[in-house]
Image (cartoon, rainbow, N blue to C red; front, side):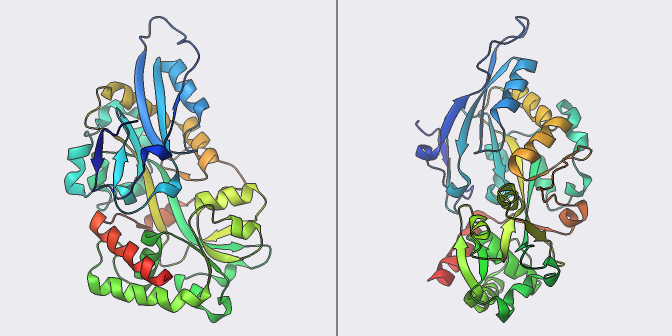
Length: 349
C-alpha cells in the first residue's frame, strides 16, 4: 500500500508493512433503499471488533474497511498514514501540536452527534478542549501501580514514590514507554507533565535513574506476562494490559497514586481529505452509543469515554470519574516526545 502522506508531527511511526486491512460487512446490505457507501478507519489492533462494524453496516448500509496498526508500533518520531483513510483512532499522546490540528483533521460537527451528550463531563477541561474541536473521545487509558494481589497487598502503595523503596530492588516491571516514565517522574516532582522545560526534564531523568536499580524488566509488548509468569509482583501497567492479564487469571490490581494517574485518551478524528464526512459522523455517533461503548470496554479493557452504560466484569479496572479528573493526560508536543525518548534511551544504557 502506498502511503497517502506523512505527518512528521504526529509522534509515531506506523510503517504500512505493519498494517493489516480488512473489509467489514461481508453480508449484503439489508435494504435496497440504503445506498452502499464506503468508509475506511485506521485504528489500533483489537479495539473495534468486526462484529461491531458489521452491525453498523447492517443499520446504515455503510461498508467499513479497517486498517490496523499494532500498539507496539507506536514510537516518538513520525507517522505514515495509509491511503484513503476517512477516520483515524489515535491516542492524544500522539496527536500533532494543537496549532496543526486543522491541517490534518476536519472540525467535528457535534450537532450531527446526538450521543455526544453521553461524554463524561470530567473530560470537558481547558487542557483537552483544543482537541475536542477536531476529535471525539472514545476510550480512556489509565496507568497506575500494579500489584499481584495474591502475593502483595495493594495497600502498600499510594504514591509514585513508593516504587523507589529499596525493598523492591530488582523486582519492578516498568512499561517501556518514554512518555509514561517521564510523566511519572514529573508528577512526583510536582512539575507539569506536558511541555516541561529542560531543567525539569533533567530532574525527572535523575529521579528515574535513582529508581533504576529497582527495575527488573522494561517491557513494551505484553508487559502483563511478567506478572503471569511470577517474575514480578509490582510495577506500572495500564488498565488495558491489566485486563489482558486478569483474563488469564493473573489477579492484578491497579492502584491510582494520590498524585494522579497517567492518562491517555483514544479519540476519533475525520481526516481532512475525507469525502465521506456524513458516513464518518454516523460511525462516530454509533460508537458512542451505550451498548457499543460496553462492547468496546469488554474488548479492550479500556474505560469508555461516556457515562450511563454497564460494564460489569470482574476483570475490568475501570477508571472512576475522580481518577480521570485528578489524572494527568499525556499531551506533549512531538519535540518534547523526542526529548523524553532520549532520556529513556540514556537511562537504559
